[in-house]
Structure formats: structure tokens, C-alpha cells
Amino acid sequence: MARVTSRRRARLDSVELPYFGLSDPEPEIPAAVYAARLERLRERMQKHALQWLLVYADREHSANISYLTGFDPRFEEALLIVGADSQSILVGNENWGTAGVAAVPLDRHLFQDFSLPGQPRDRSRPLAAILADEGIAKNARVGLVGWKTYAEPWMTDVPAYLVDTLRGICGADNVTNETGALIDAQDGLRVINEPEQIAYLEWAACHVSDGVRRLLFELRPGMTEHDAVALLAWNGTPLSCHVMLSAGPRAKYGLLSPSDRRIARGDAFTTAYGIWGALTCRAGFVVEDADELPAGIRDYLDKLVVPYFEAVAEWLEALHIGQTGGALNELIARRLRDPFFGIFLNPGHQISLDEWVNSPVWPGSEVELRSGMAMQVDIIPATGTDYFTSNIEDGIALADAALRATLAHRYPRMWRRITERRTFMARALDIELHPDVLPLSNLAGYLPPFVLSPERALTLG
Image 1 (cartoon, rainbow, N blue to C red):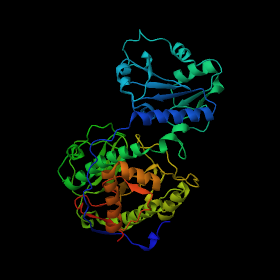
Image 2 (tube, rainbow, N blue to C red; image 1 turned 120 degrees about the vertical axis):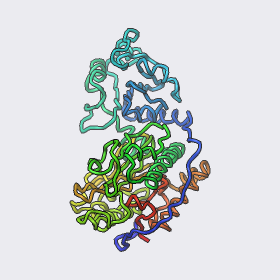
Image 3 (cartoon, rainbow, N blue to C red; image 1 turned 180 degrees about the vertical axis):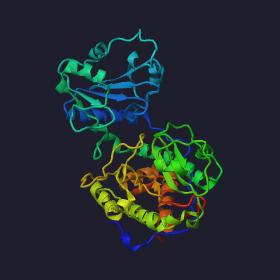
Image 4 (tube, one colour; image 1 turned 45 degrees about the horizontal axis):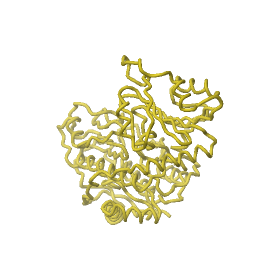
């Protein structure tokens, strides 16, 4: 149960941010984990009377195939076909060899319509013939996994030429969107993470949060945005979203990439850095103190940052297994219901290889948080005013006693970092997390609103 944070007033204070360290080397997901995922998927297929499940991927939306096989397509699209006792993959010219990296055996079909424009298309058979070879025939029940779920089961984001071919073979009513099997907010396979996956998520969170920390502590006026973004020191892991960094007039647009514009003292500033498994964001002003802000917004701290931080702190303290998404939504609505704050997206969502898998947090949601879920503290004010915004976005995982014991035993260095982060949040920030909550980021709870004073952060202590 959350403490009554309404009686605790946040303030800006000098806070010594410890260095929690990095996970090294990168945790690997064993082949047996991928095989177990496919078996769980087949159990879902059997439950829903599906003979086949077809998982589509392109470069931006490859998390489902990567989760199931360890392979993600580069340049091209791909289609995974999962049967009762088989799995095959359709790939184009560029990925014919790359698919060999998969952690599970895959029968490969060359399907050159997935290849780039102008490349050879003279060595692959028609789609209908490939599907027939796989055993997909008249009246077969086929589920499609794309990127999103929709209001009607016939709606899908899988390309029409693939869907039309399947419906022509199986009958229109026999081809349905089954993306929820993987991303349903309550029990989708991908929203519940194994110990191995949580270890990977923490590794990713270490890297992105260390990059943002470096940026916050080393940014100086006069740097270009490109100079500043280099401080993130991207390690080459695939990005979960484009790198965002902007200052000055461009910052209000939020999602922009860096430019050669020089960052000036007094600028609004925002950055977001995400690789597979993690994302960290921060925002504020390039000043040392509120006195440097324009006269009309020198109450930035009291008007925006303090109530925002207090709301996020209560949200964090309210997290536990069994908590409902509706309760989390109501908490933020109660705290930040004034239209000034401009909270209009879900206050919190699930994260995995892709930055946003789904969200259990919406008005009236009865979805209960479960052990193994990874959540993103994604609660972003969009004031649309000169007050700009504030941001304290990082990831956490939820783990019951059994999962915590497993993580502590298998990954003792990771467990030490998690324990030290919890201690820091309690002692330095006065944010008391439920035992179920595992902070994954090296910036967990740390919010410095003035970029040129990164050692001063909000605290409830």
C-alpha cells in the first residue's frame, strides 16, 4: 500500500548520486528459453483452436519474431510460420543467411517479394505455393501476429497482399488477428519476462541510464546538439527508438533528433535514449537555478516540477504485484488532473525489446500487475506553455519472492545493483518501494530540473 505522499512536500536538494555500475558481459538468452517460448505459444494456439500462427516483422516492428527466435530481420520483412510441431521463416535475399543466427531451428523459404526494390526476384516461388508446402490449406484456422490489436478480429496491420492470399486459401473468417497472444496487457507472452530476460533488461537499462547521466553531468552551453548526443556513447545495441535530443525552440516538439544548433544557457532541453530493453528520458532547462529562467516561469519548480515529482513518487510507491492499472491511472489523474499538466497518454506502460509493448494503465483498467512484468515510468507533462515539461522516465521490473530469490542467486552482481538502487531511493529521495519493485536504471528516481546543476535533484526527504 502506498504511503500518504500528499503530506510530504518535494524540494530541490543536493543529492549524491552513487555510481551503481554496469552489467558485464551482456546476458545471453539461452536457446532453451526461446524453445520454451514457442511451446507456450503453441499452447495458446491450441487453446484458441488455431492450426497456424504467422508472425510478421519489419525493421521497426521485429520484437515479436526476435522474442520467439532470436532473429530480427535487417533491411527487409520476414514471416515466421508456427505450426503444431514446426516453425519456418520466409525471408528475402538479404536475410537468407542472417536467419541462420536464430536460436531455434527454422526451415527457410526464400520469398523475394520481401527483398529490396530492384533486387532479383527470379528464384522464389509464389506465396500460395510456399504456404501450401507448409500445410496451410482450405478452412485452416490461421492467426496473424502483427504489431497491434484492433477493435475487430479481422483488422490487422500485416500487409494486405499476405492477408489476401491467406484469406483466399483458408476463407476470410478463418484468418484472425491474434497479436494479443504476445502483447495482451494482462497475460501476453511478452509482458511476462523470464529471469534471463530481466537480466538483459537491466543490462540495457544500465547502458542507457549511464549515457543520460553522462550527458546531464557533462553538457555545457556552446555544445551543438550533436556534440551533446555523443555523450550518450551508444554501444551499438539496436535502438528501440530514434535518439532524441533537442534544446531551445525545437525542444517543445519533443521527439526531434539532434541538430547542429548550439545549446545556449536558458534553453529548454529534452533527451531520450533507448536501446532494446530500456529507455531513459530527462528534461528541464539549461540553467543553474530558477533565477536564470524568464521572469514569467521562475516558479517552474513549484508550479510544475514539485507536483510532478510528488505524483511520480506516489505512483512508484503504489506499484506492487496485484495492483490494478486503473488504480495507477486514478492516482496520476488525482495528482495531475489540472489541464495545465497536459497528461494525455497512459501514465505508465510495459517495455521489452520494443519501447512500448502495451499498457495496463487506463481509466477503469482491471488489469493486474504480475510478477515478471517490466514497466516504464512514462508519465510526461505536455503543458504547451513556456513552462515546457519535466521528465523522469526509467524502467522497473516486478518480481515476487520466488523470482527475486532466483534473480539474486543467478545474477548476484545485478541483484546488488538493484538493492543499492532501492536503498538510494529510500535514503536519499525518501521513495519507499514495495519489495516487488526492482529499479533497473542507474538514474532511478533521480530528477535534476536544472541541467547545469545536475547534483541538485528532487527529494521528499
